[in-house]
Length: 252
Image (cartoon, rainbow, N blue to C red; front, side):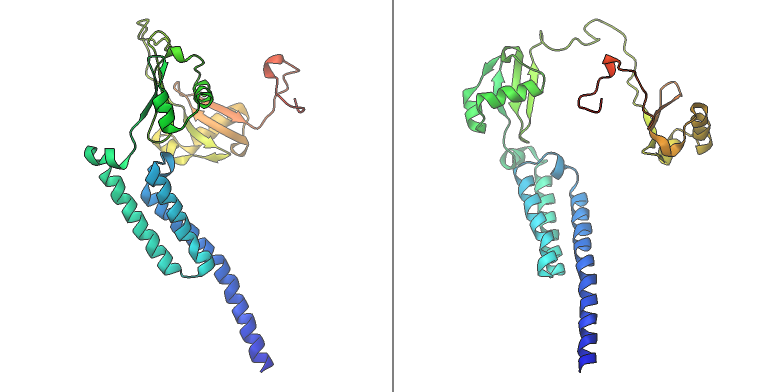
């Protein structure tokens, strides 16, 4: 009897340990897949029902960790994902969009602060001014239009006389913008970018050898417009108390 009960005890204990590991792992993986199926919109924009969807889905997929009914929880989560995708699809139609989403609210128009708009979004003046400072605006008179978007973010359009000068204003020719292409990130080679540029690892190693760098010591290496390689490594340069290289804190 004792040996049998001990065997059952150890067996049950082993199963419990395995279950304790696989259940949270399974919940995490399935929850991640559901969010990937939903798309970036649920995380990036967060409208009212985006928040509701995320809150409900989070609660549903976390239920199996405590309750143990994995199948039912995942079924419910799948239904919520389908409903959410349906709402997203419906929101692409202009007539339904104005029902599902809140309309943007004007906070400043032609330099005048709209009290009705602030009251509608329940935003005090000091918070509005703070949001404007974050965006680089200190004077409301310089703003043509400030709007709280349906996502809760504030968009600001300055008056024409206060906007930054564009090259087009000065009739200056401007070349096409080039985005440096990462070839090494955190000591790891980005092979798909090498392939895209029709380069190989031997070319990269040759360029690194010219500068005396090794792959594992490179934080970032990017392919520049002129075909050269920019390298940012872990080496710390001593600038001998140069004021231009001051770092706040005691470790400067």
